Length: 383
Image (tube, rainbow, N blue to C red; front, side, top):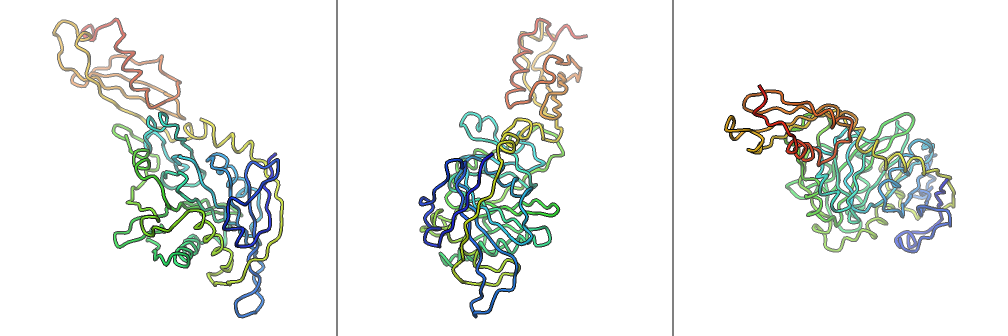
């Protein structure tokens, strides 16, 4: 199994991400810290809860989702809360109950090598790249409070850059009077553990974001959770001096100086203690990167597309300008049934049994249309 290694450091080292090192067996380099144990007034902090910050050095979405899931399932957060900070290479991440074909431009993703992943929490679809910072706040269920978590991020932005942000009614972090979103939120609530994770748009490529999340949902019927689009803004557009590495340190420091059970600012330099936590990520990485998890977990849906029938298939002037409608039923990511009808006369032509039990991909409708073009039976023969 892989090993997650934690090393002691002070705030200066914490701010310098590139100075971190890893052991020879580490997939991901990590850094751990302990929260302050004294308040600013010198009195002892009576809270028994410690806090640590882990920083993933992997930019692979499946590694980071595996790490997040391992911590959620295996770590005891009763007396030790954790903030995990992580970044990914270009990736579209959908919610637990969403449909990737509905939420993203899957053809564009395939052509440009952009990964698509499904996370374990609910909520909508987001785009990640190296200009986006992801934060996961782990606590026991009874101490889950995502508004407090967002308040820590908001404080860090104000303390470091004098930037004023607000928490919206949907508990997203927003800036400006027009409420442009700089952070989206999702959660996983279990027993005994819970986590709240959110994005922070620092310097995301908004052109790629828009193209990757361009929806092609016409003709798709499903009960899958649908995303709600929001206008977004990068932090570097609000404050030109915002850099992700420095911001990462500012948020981690703000988290550590805040009392685990309240929003009280404790303000002291954190006391550090080296730790080692064995982490077996191989199986979880394989699960999150599998086709079965990313695509087959989608709720059942149907896709309807309409094509103009080639005149050579219509016979001798019996029909003209006919539309062909193809309806594909997809269950667990596999084509379950295909029906083809002529739009005007509404007559069933053929059931494409040869297309059944194939994985559904963005080119499936095009492939079926091509198969029909090769048929030897013109539509005019249908009585």
